[in-house]
Image 1: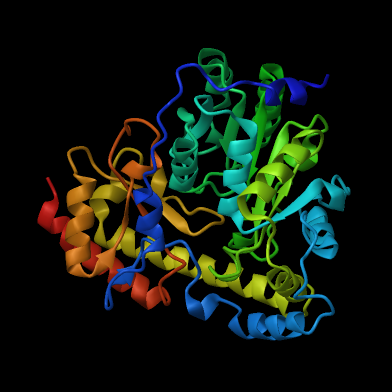
Image 2: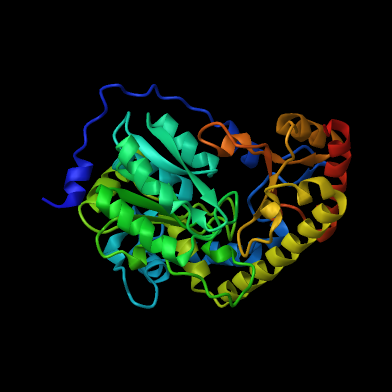
Amino acid sequence: TSWQEIALSAEAAADQVPRSVDASGVLATLAGPPPGVVELSGGYLHPDLQPERALAAALARAGRRPGAWQRPPLEGVHELRAWFAREIGGPGGALAPSDVLITAGGQSALTAALRALAPPGAPVLVESPTYPGVLAVARASGLRPVPVPVDADGVRTDLLADAFRASGARLFVCQPLFQNPTGAVLAAERRAEVLRVARAAGAFVIEDDFARRLAHEPAAALPPTLISDDAHGTVVHVGSLTKVTSPSLRVGALAARGPVLDRLRAIQVVDSFFVPGPLQETALELVGSPSWPRHLRAVSRELGARRDALLAALHARLPGPAGADGGAALSAPRGGCYLWLRLPDGTSEEALAGAALRAGVSVARGRPYFPAEPPAAHLRLGFASASGPAELTEGVRRLAAAWQEVAP
C-alpha cells in the first residue's frame, strides 16, 4: 500500500464542519464595476491585452477539425494533454501525457483537487493570505482551512511542519509563483522544505501555478514547477490558460502521479463529465499558432509597464501607506497582476473600499484573503484589468481622494 492510498483512505471527520458557501471574495473580483469606474479589483486581462483575433482564428480552425464536435476523451484531448505535460514537466520530461487531466479552467481544477484529496470535515493547510477562491471551495466542501503565514519569500516553512502536526492535515494548498495576493515567489530553499515537510506528514501539496505565464520580463528565468522536482507523488499541479488569454477560455489542467490520478478523474467525471471538445481544440490551435509566443511577450511587457505605473502613482499619491510598516507590500512583484497594500493601523479597509467606489475606483478588500483574523487592514490592487497606465494613474488619484475622506 502506497502512502497515497493511506492518505486517500481517510474517512470524513466525526465532527464535520457545516458546509458554507461564501462567494463574496470571489464575486468582488468577478463582478465588473459600474460604467465609469476604474477597475483595480479585477484579475483578468483588459480586452486590449487579450488575444481576441488569435482566439477567433483558433476557434474557427478548431470548429473545422475532424471530430471536434464529438464527445472527447474523458481525460481530455491527447494532444492538449501532451502540451500541458511538456509545459508543466519542463525540459526534463518529468510528466507524461497520461499524468494530465484537462479541466474547465483553474477553479474547476482546484475544486476537483480539494474534493478528491480531503474528506468533509478534514483540515486543509492554506497560505495566509491566499486566493479567496481556495477558501470558498474548501468551506463549500466542508473542509477547515488552517492558515500558514506567507512572507516575502513565500510560505513560512518554519511553521509548516508545526501546522501539519497540530492540525493533522493531509493537504496543503500553495501558490509558489507570484502568489495571489502578495506576489511572493517561494524561495529555492523553501521549495525543497515544502516537499520534505509534506512527505514527512504523508500529505499532498496542491500547487496552484496560475501565474506562470504572467511574468513581467519576457525572457525571465522562472523556477520550475514543484511537481517537476517531486519524485514521490506528493504534488498535484493545477495550471490554466485562462489568466493569460480570456476569462471565457476556461481550459486548465490537473497533473499528478500515482493512484491519486484515478481519484481526480472520478471526481471530475462526476462533476462535469468532460471539457467540451471545441474548447479544447481551440486552446490547442491557439498555443500551436505563431501568434502565441508573440502574445506572451506582449502581455509580459504590458504587465510590467502597468505595474510600474501603478507603483509610481501609489508612491506619489499615497505616501502614508507606502511608508508604513509592512510597506514591502508595495515592492514590485516580478509577475502576476496584483499589488498588496498594507494600510496603516486604524484604517478601515471596508470604509476605504466604499469611499473609493463612490469616488469612481473599485478595489478589493483584504479581509476575504485571510482564512482567520487578519493581522492588519489591506487592499489588493490589480493592474491587469485597467485600460493602461493613464487609467491606473487616474484610479490612484480617485483612491487618494477616498483616502483623505476616511484616513484616521
